Length: 612
Image (cartoon, rainbow, N blue to C red; front, side, top):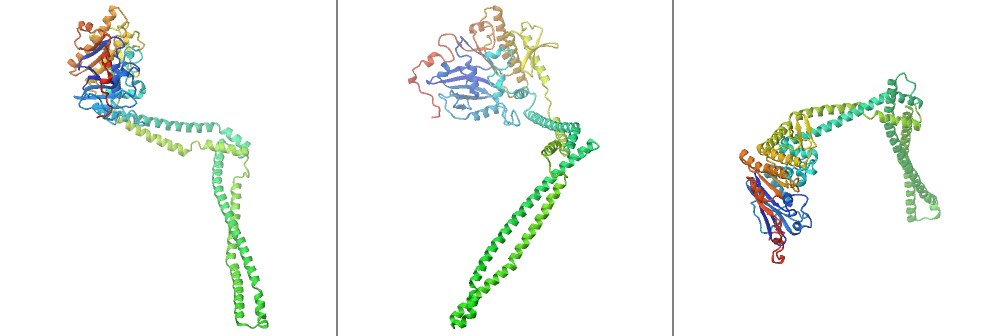
């Protein structure tokens, strides 16, 4: 991969613009007094590369005066510009794919779109994920843990990597995955297979635990069998038995019968209730019919005088019209009488037959219910008996033999599947990579003729598990190394060695670039000339890194160094690859010179957030 930073640009709120220029294949040094904004350079690069935090000093000159932060850089022979608005909550970006640096940035693209473009340059696609379950994507940003060394980390005995790119937030498994990819130990496809294999292993372990619990429950049941049998006899649930096996058999049969009777009784009681409802409904209907019949009888009685009138009519009065009326009334009486007789002979008979049938069925159901209860030979279970049988049923039902068999079949199938998966996975040969890294670190120390104070006979080695450097002499390992100066050298040597490895293996995910903040920290207040020599040796390591990458590996490399040392002193040291970006010694010098913010604000055009 090709990469180097050309410019860092700050667009101020008063319309002024501040630019820092860097060169490729150089140790680009910004040096000066304290509190001039040197360390903020790391934060600006971090912020423009999609940081979720803004770590510029709050309430200071920089935070008060900057409207947009920007970087102009070359990546794989393309020139890009990324600018980000100072208000992190807005999360607003300007992006140019041809490296254009605008007079005033404007919002022209969402963050995600820029990330996708950068990820593409890193050869990262959507398949790069941390977990099969969570589907959290791996981005270019995650690999930038190899590109920064902040002041607090550089000589730290506990942390080899700083948290500039959220390395602190990684889980161990996630950080390992970044290292597997960065060191070429595994492909993403292989890591996905390993993840799935691990998930299946967890599933298999769960099934085995379940089966073990089942077997353990059965074993405990055997151990407690005598107690169960004794209690069952005391409660008079079973008769005296000859053996524990016979006891267990009787108790299992009893529980099975209880379950069957419970189900049969439930169905019988449902049928019993249904018949009672039908009988009740039909008897209500019969009652209503009797009331209706009584009404008809009353109507019939009210017409009975017509029979008398008809017999006596000729004696009382001879009238043809009245005779017809009386005949009609007589006919109605006969019709009512016939209707009542017909109802009695059909509907009532059918209704009575239905009620009789339902009552017979109900008698039979009641007999069946009594019979099902008598099958247990226990007419009424006491509360103690019911509780015991319930507890025993729960014990028996922990795992049935069928469930155990199914569990074992699932275990066998999953075991075969895992074995097949394992054959398709490439082994992670970490030890071979560690040997190469260790060799590169030792080579750097020997070429620079550097010996760690107090550990002259020891050699550095990378502890992959802890992501730390240890010292070794034969089989003896030292993890707690004294002196911040020793830690500083180990950090520098490791980062130089691992970047040489990245270049040799042509790893596409790592930028050939490092930014380092204040190597002089362990020596800054010292007036000892020997300390100054040690410090210059550290600077020499960086100088030789550029030479090695250019001459031995035929590749580019860029270093940005933030320091206190005077440039004049560096020039006297005869380093070949140092380039002075700026030196901030005078009053008013710094990342934002005073002259840029003392200009009359009213004469400057305010930068616009949007493209005009």
